[in-house]
Amino acid sequence: METKQKLETALKEAMRANDAVRKATIRMALTNIKLAEVEKGSPLEDNAILGILQKEIKGRREAISDAEKANRPDLIANAEAEIVVLNEFLPKQLTPEELTVLANAAIQEVGASSPADMGKVMKVLMPRVQGRIAGDQVSQVLKQLLQKS
Image 1 (cartoon, rainbow, N blue to C red):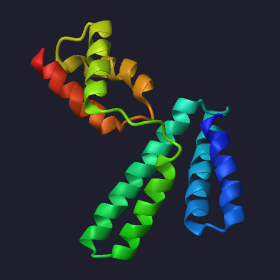
Image 2 (image 1 turned 60 degrees about the horizontal axis):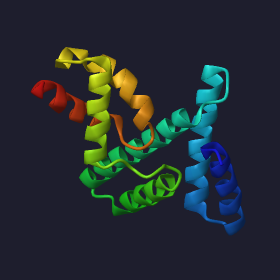
Image 3 (image 1 turned 180 degrees about the vertical axis):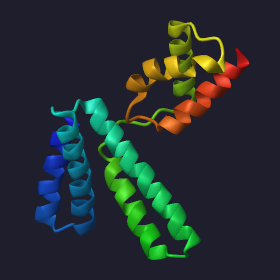
Image 4 (image 1 turned 60 degrees about the vertical axis):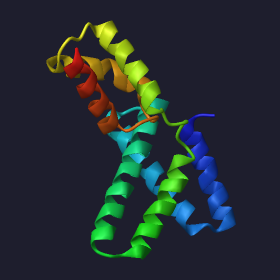
């Protein structure tokens, strides 16, 4: 089943179960997906939807960081609960070792030899890892690998 369909089904189940956090989190994700579809003018592919979910999680992590600075444990708990809900719809996350293997393959495929080639490698690698790891982590690993070569 496609990720968007899973989200819609989970929303209906959350509404039946009267699970407020789950319902609000899934609604927000579906709203952002629909906004992206309107901007694009066509339905999104599953990889793009996974990217939106990753972006949602990143936003929650930033909110946790801000809430820690403000000493707001209530906001931290809410954001952590939302992250748990969103993670249910993402595929198994890549380990650093798996990312390194995929990054090396992309570097070989593009023929990259320096950090200046990072954009070319990212263009090839990101669709392969979308939704399974955050883009900033991909960027860090690529920088390390390209500086060594």
